[in-house]
Image 1 (cartoon, rainbow, N blue to C red):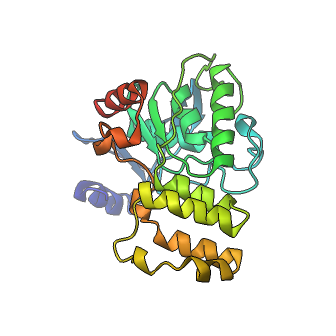
Image 2: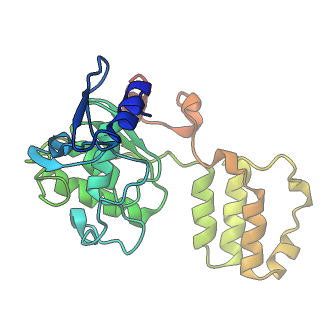
Length: 265
């Protein structure tokens, strides 16, 4: 918003044609007014970005200057939809963090955020549930370590290097979910059910005494699977960190060390 002094000078200059007025300001740049309008100097729009002096305007909350065209194979990972340009992630990461900070992406996808964070010398954590997406992200990060030159590599003067650690959540009930999905016969499902009774976490409202084997085997395979799936407590698909010392889960010494190191950061 213009100061009251600038407004006064604007009004005054309307009656003083072709005369330039100067308004000196202690807390801002000096303003020059001609015929009721402020003069804009092109030099004020020039800024150094990525080592080059270019015309620029103040960033708004609508970013339309980062193109999506040509990013289909960026990072060596092909993705038809949902992929973001590395330049966009570079802007966001640099706005919100400094070198050495931790960047969290809880929907890792094709690994764009992790790749850019690595190139910008940030630490990062990425979480992903879909196996095919995990494979793409790991492939991309391997390329980053090798010094691939797509995306923001040249701007960031990226030459390769560094490392990352890949880990999977330790399964508990999820292991039974996978077995149920793969089972091809009712007898195989019964064997899984017997194992579940010894090791799995059941939903609290499930009455195990009401399970009838003969009636169960009369059902279609898909119905049998639905019944067993409904028994499983989805809150215990994976082993919680708080249970790391429980011998039931047989957590290896190396996994214990990794987890304790991770949560101490």
